[in-house]
Amino acid sequence: MTAYDALMAYERETQALGRVAGRLSWDQETMMPRGAVEQRAEEMGAMQAMMHARKTDPRIGEWLEDARAPDEAGAAQLRLIAHQFERLTRVPSDLTRALASLTSRSQSQWAAARAEDDFASFAPTLEEVVRLKREEGAALADGGDVYDALIDDYEPGASAAHLAAIFDEMRPGLVKLRASALQGIERAPVSGQFAPEVQVALARELAERFGYDLNRGRIDMAVHPFSSGSGDDVRITTRVSEDDPFNCLYSTIHEVGHACYEQGVDPAYHMTPVGQGVSMGVHESQSRIYENQLGRSRAFCHFLYGRMRDAFGDIGVADEEAFYATVNRLHRGYIRTEADEVQYNLHIMLRFELERALIAGDLQVRDLEAAWNDRFKADFGYDVDRASNGVLQDVHWSVGLFGYFPTYSLGNVYAGCLHAALRKDLPDLDDHLAEGDPSAATAWLRENVQRHGGLYEPREVIARACGQEPSAGPLMTYLVEKFGALYPA
Ligand code: ZN
Image (cartoon, rainbow, N blue to C red; front, side):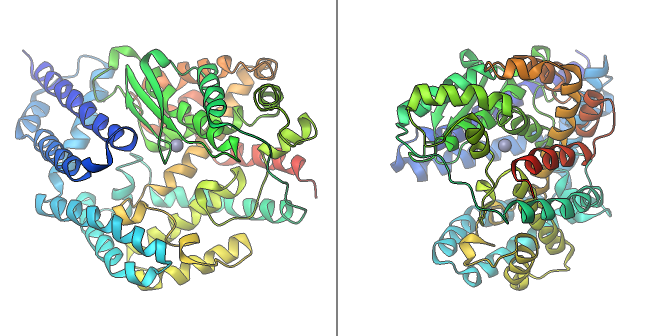
């Protein structure tokens, strides 16, 4: 057996065990009995310790030294394995343990502070999280930029400077667009009777129309929608809000985008490091283009309007045009996860700049709430009324996710690039979308993005698919055209 073959056999087993661990997390959010919380924590802790030991096994270093890649995919496998091995072995194990223990406690402290709207009570814990993340980042960076090293966990190859350049280019246009759109009257949401079982049945139908293979997947209910798994077992969850059917329908389409990416990877790569989505940003590009550029398009809304009236009867909108406007309504609000296509990116940029400053040491945790509120006022035009609507709204920082937020907006930028490219290749796409058939677009995405899995670096996947380097231009053009028409000055 060659070193390469031995390494790949070992990795395959690691992948299999990782899938088992992932299914435990899925189970925890969907099926697990409430009384099992403590026991599950112990089970997951044991899995994590075992996985960490496997992934830092010194034999991996030896195999990597001797391994010769048989082909391009093999070279990508070695690159991904080496990257992860280096990452895990650079961080001292007592720091890894300290972070795991702190973040498992800090999440419940964050939840308690959020319930009380009391940032000050959470600040000391968050200070400790930031301190340990800076230590971890420094160990990973090996002399380079600490925040870049943290971003690398989610978006390999991205840098804060490059992301800042993209975001700085977008921010003035987005602020202007939101301000002029919201000068007029806010549009009302839909109204009517939206029975949960009817919502779920329609969500299921949409999932299949968008190409989700339910023979290798399933849809369950969870508090926060997510997708999990890869290869031949890719599951999604959804949720139902009785007065807002779009919550269920569009979060399902979003998760279907993630799931189709995983299901669309070339089966030859299954159960290997290359056999899954390459980064958070590219993943989010798939979920966003399914949800927004395709799912909220005028043509698809034509189809959905008819299906919703069949399913629910009167939904409180006058006609198809009003339906399209309602699906794409901009509204004032504080919460990132409820934000529309225009304002979502402003939420992300705010978090990106604040966490970058925290990790750089340019901003202290005790000043974070004031900095948040100032920035929010500047971009959104009104004051944050309480901490749960501001600095305490997201779980991410409490669990040590620094460097994760910018991948959401990067995903939107990538979605903008991919959408422009696929529209060029598919001039009659709208005719199909109007009949509820996005398959030409999803096939294009599978062929140009999804099947590659981790074969190329994230930016390279997008550049190859689009025939040019990704930039903010296509997304901004799309947003200005779409929302300029929906909200004429
Ligand atoms: Zn997503």
